Image 1: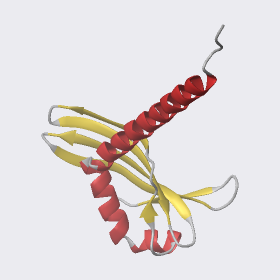
Image 2: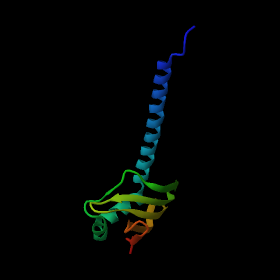
Image 3: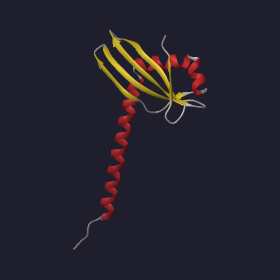
Image 4: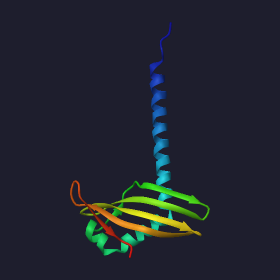
Length: 130
C-alpha cells in the first residue's frame, strides 16, 4: 500500500498559488497601466505638476502612487472617467479627484481637485480648475 505523495501535492499546490497570485498581480498592473494611459489621467497630472499650490500642499517632489481608484469607460471616441489618483509628496500625501468626459476623441476635465488630509477626520479640498 502506497501513501499519498505529499511532496508532489505540496509542490503542485505551491506552483498553483504562485500562478494565481502572479496572474492577479499582472492583471491589476495591466488595468492600472491602461488607466494611466487615459487622457484624463495625463491631463490631470500635467496640471497638478505645474500648479505651485500642489507642490506647496504635498512637498516637492511628489509622485503618483502605484495604484489608482475609479473607473474609465470608453465607447468609440467618447467616454467618461472618474478617478482618484493618490499622490505622495515629501511632507504630505493627498489624492487628485478627476472627473472627465471624452467627446469626439477629446478629453474635457469637469472636476480636478486635490484632497489632502489635515487630521484623522478632516480634509482640505483644493480646486485646480479655473
